[in-house]
Image 1 (cartoon, rainbow, N blue to C red):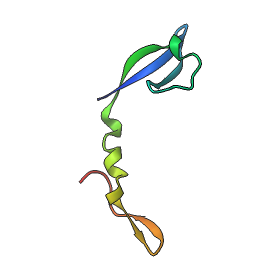
Image 2: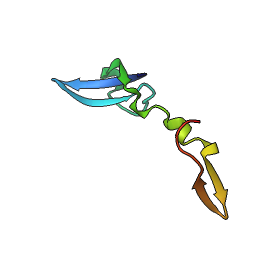
Image 3: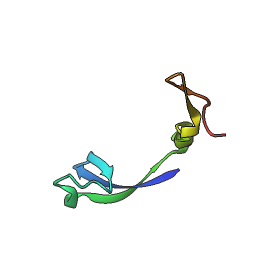
Length: 70
């Protein structure tokens, strides 16, 4: 599981907003609760899938050369 630090705004029992800690443009950011959110490893490996070595340019077109991590 991956851990993300977030600011969460709750009204009643509903989550109104969940944003990264780096949010600076929100006027209500001081009213939010800071929480750690854990996301299942379902999306693990996305960075390696979209890494630069997975794509090559051939005759002006971008082509994908592989999937997932090596």
